[in-house]
Length: 248
Image 1 (cartoon, one colour):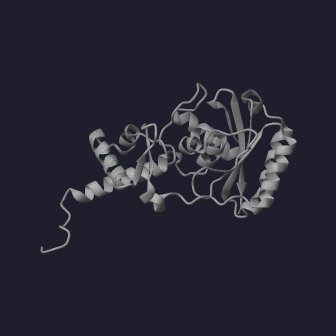
Image 2 (spheres, one colour; image 1 turned 90 degrees about the horizontal axis):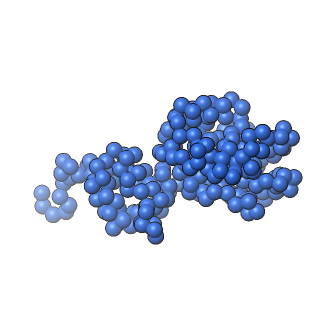
C-alpha cells in the first residue's frame, strides 16, 4: 500500500473498542470514577486500563481531576456528554416554591429526561448531596430509586453498590425488594442511607402518557421520613401531579 495511513492490524480494533468502552464507563459512572473502578467494571487488566486512560488524557478526551483520584470527560469529549436537562419553566418553579412554603423541610426537583438524575431545582435553603454523587450512586437516594424502579434491569445504571452508611442497601436482593415496593406504591424512600442525619421521600412526576419525566423529593430527619405524616405525603403527590403537564 502506498501513501496514507497503514491498514489496521489485528490488535487495533480491539484497542479501539476498549478505549471507547473506557469513555462510556466514565460517562456512565460520572466525574471522579477511578482507574481501579473502570478496570473492575470493564474486566480489563489494570495495566491496560492505565495505558488507555493515559492515552485518552493525552488526547484531551479525558482529564484528571485536581485531586488526582479520578477522571472526567475532557474538552474533546464534549459531544459525548449526556444532553443537559431543560430548566423548569416559571410555572413549574412556582409549584415547587409553593410546596416549599408549606413544609419545613427541603424540597428538590430532579429531571430524568436525559436518562439520568439531574437536579433542575434544588432547594437553596436545604442544599442536597452533590449531583455527581446522586447520579453515580442512584441506589442511595429516593430520587435515584424512582429512576431505578423504572428500569428493566436496574443493574445497567448501578455500577457500584457502595455503602455510605450502615443503612445503605448494598445487597442486590434487598435493593430488588425496595425497588419493587417503589414500583408498586409510587413512593421511594431512603432513611439515612446516604447521610445518617438525612432521609428523603420522593414521588414520580409523569407526563400524559405515564412516562417518568421527573421526581419531586421531600428531605428531612430519617425517623420522620420513615413515618411520614399522611398529609405531607398527600401534598407531595399533589404537587407532583401539578408538575406533570408543566414538565412533559
